[in-house]
Length: 71
Image 1 (cartoon, helix red, strand yellow):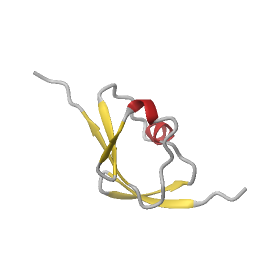
Image 2 (cartoon, rainbow, N blue to C red; image 1 turned 135 degrees about the vertical axis):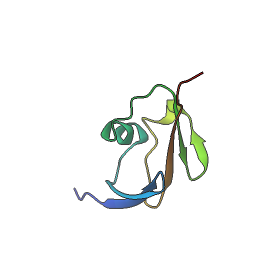
Image 3 (cartoon, rainbow, N blue to C red; image 1 turned 120 degrees about the vertical axis):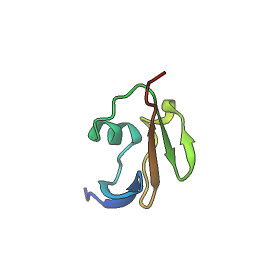
Image 4 (tube, one colour; image 1 turned 180 degrees about the vertical axis):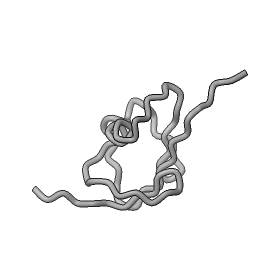
């Protein structure tokens, strides 16, 4: 089994990840546990229900938008 390394942009910063990574795993690796966040891939919002099945592809531009509480 060969692990391919892919290049992505995460919040406008180049990152390398392993092939087969889902959004859920990426969020775990980045320790993002905020309840209020959205994930956008190539300018398309990915619903939370798809995070565990959505496979990140080489060249994806990923934005993780966290909501800051306040008022």
